[in-house]
Amino acid sequence: MRYKCLQILSSCITCAMREDLVIRNVAKLVERPKYTPKETTIWSAEQAALFLQAVKEHPHYIAFLLFLTYGMRRGEVLGLRWCDIDFDNGLIYIRQQIDRINGEIKARDLKTQNSRRILPLIDNVRDTLLELSRKRGGIITKFEPHSELSTQNTIVVCRYGTILEPRNLNRCFYQLTEKAKLPHIKIHAMRHTTATILKDLNVPIKDVQLILGHSDLTTTAKIYQHGTFEVQQTALSAAHERLIGPM
Image (cartoon, rainbow, N blue to C red; front, side):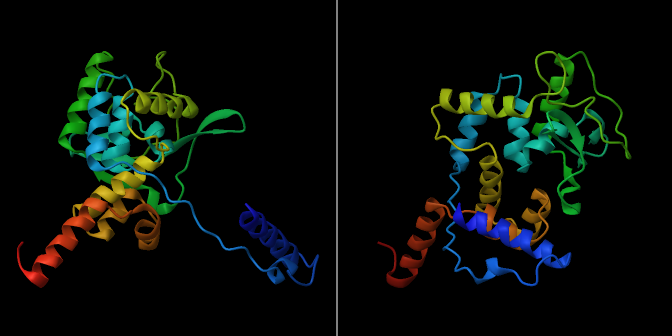
């Protein structure tokens, strides 16, 4: 907390320097406390699979499938519309996000230019979307190559068919996690889980970066990809066998 406060204060004083309100940034003279980021708790691939199986009949199943398949952000999942799905060419266009801003749910542009991306429409996700459309009376709209920001025609909706409150999706996720008797993780940690699963599958880090929509490889490698005990155990056993031969 002290580290973040000092960081914010330093940024404010730097802005004041640009306006010639002060002559130096005294916050930079303060010895900064050591910053140790908290380790993010994630699920294993097996736990993620168990969760998806447990929530398969839930109305928001498609949201969790998108989270864990593509590592999408919450706002991206909520902002995905039927017109963003190109069923003919098997593509998903990530073009907007939905958040609560100043007390109102709004569609807004994505976090960075790299966040605007095109992802392959995996067969299982395609089938799930088509089945969801069938249950809702065939509401698929035609793919629109160029579309304005909008809260209309979103895929993830509440029981009344309108845009889903972001906090309600969080609440739903935590309730389902508890019901499935799985370790409690933050909803954003599903994104970390996907990144780590892709790492363990030896997917090139550049491709993981593009899937997640990160601006650079460092963010993908240092923040979102986590070590996996089972992978380490397999690697060490293989190295040990090279050294002394099979047991």
